[in-house]
Length: 336
Image 1 (cartoon, rainbow, N blue to C red):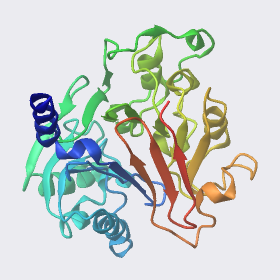
Image 2: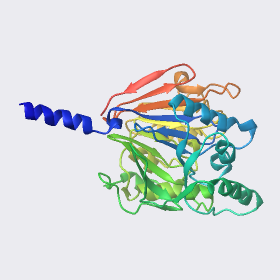
Image 3: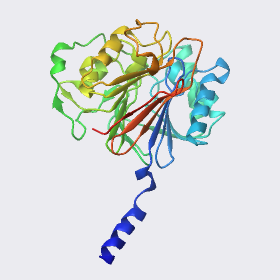
């Protein structure tokens, strides 16, 4: 008996400290861009995109505020999903405020011209002062405490289903491809973030046809607990063949007041099998009141009253809690 107790005590003491902690996720309002901060149970951090430049450092300051709330003073990884202004533009201002360990991207921008070149070179000038990692579909970002699986990057998605996925997708028969997208959106890094049984998907601004490649003829990713709406809830993305195959319990829409949150995309998300709630960073003026999330689930109810974030806290058993920073609305979703 004594030997048995010693074995139990040893197992408890040798278990990683993060096993009993939470994965904290901040969906930061950058007015229709993306800035999503992950802080692992091990205290490591990963920021996905940096919002817009200018506005007196508005987006960088909002990211810093979220980092302070999370108790971190540096960013271990900054993932740039693609090279558009609302995703990579805030890098120089952010780097002035927080040290960054490693920048992660898909390689060189596919867009050219003065604006695209200036944007990319401004990022590279900052990136080259830190470590740099280029990822491809199938890679993993080596951050302690969670698993970050890259499912799309540089215009390519994973070719083989992830473990537990690969089911035939009947929705493919009624979903048609659209015009080919040659922009940076189609190059987006997409990631499946897992902490124990909790699963969340972030596909950046991946567009319709690239989403379809992940969904058809088989669902290569499987189901998720939380779906961050692709491309801010725009209709060029949020392909129902993929969104409905995910069967998310909760969707987070990182739209602005007048950018994203389209009626078509919101309907796709709301009609997904198993969806319980949709949370939005802004009331969308591109959709009706009925098509928007209910008021308690809206972080910003008008364009002139910005509030910082939606916060998610996930447990390794699959439970998670979502909180609206405007009104303190909190809802816990039990493990399934």
